[in-house]
Image (cartoon, rainbow, N blue to C red):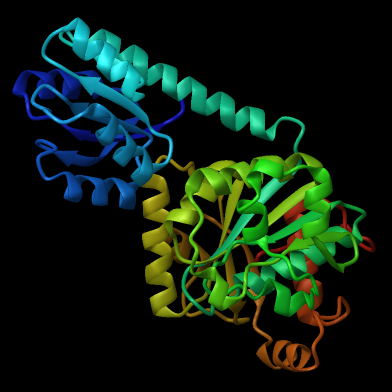
Length: 385
């Protein structure tokens, strides 16, 4: 069953107890809990931060038009399932709820109908995820545990290597604050991901082709907007729509999410197969890595979907890989060697790493491991250390 996150505001004690009893034993987690929706602004702020899949709201004492409440919730969260709870089956209230856009109207006894409603939503989310992946290639999100961990360098060179392997690759920059994919790959396109988001109504393959740039052989690139233009923050459903449109056209979709977890990053992760979390051995980076991993796990993101990449790894570590994995809670998928002078010289010359350099070879092996591809000259196993 697909795990769901839940936000609730229930004032009536009977409704609250029955809702809690229903959730026992189900893979659903409450992440927003209010006693009532009297302080609507605070409730909406928490919904916007936490982005639950389902919102349970007690409307027994609500005296304002339900249309306004529903619109406010959807504006804060995107497209959650909204379940109205009431102490009775009043026909007029039921009709008003449905007209307002509430998905389900439930009244005591709650346990069985609420369980069925949540299971229905869980199945829908699971089918949506499976359906978006059907016919589409593999997709990875790349994010740095904190600024400077190197996720952009990693994703750009992974994309370049997959392109060399005759794979059709999309490299998308969703770092709206400081995206550097365009800088590293030297793309010349005047368009950005915001052009796709702002023109969803006309998004087809012809329009998409006009947005992309071919800065790397075999790789189509959609850059992030310029810093001054990136004040616009896309909505969750817009990001999911663009990713859902693009994925079926490529063997590989690689998305740079920037640093740490954001609301936009969480929305993108719903549409992508796995997350490549790039970190270093710096203490702040490891601290943030542990926080991100725990947040993902708490939100229902499967541990098997997290690929931890240790960047700038020295040849000798003060901590064993096993100790590091135990501390962070997930296995280390791969390590990338530390060769800052080579990388600095490469970027200063306005180019990407040569595949013949040690760091270039290391990143090529990472791409081959991610892609399940054979190395060109050897079948030697890619060791992590």
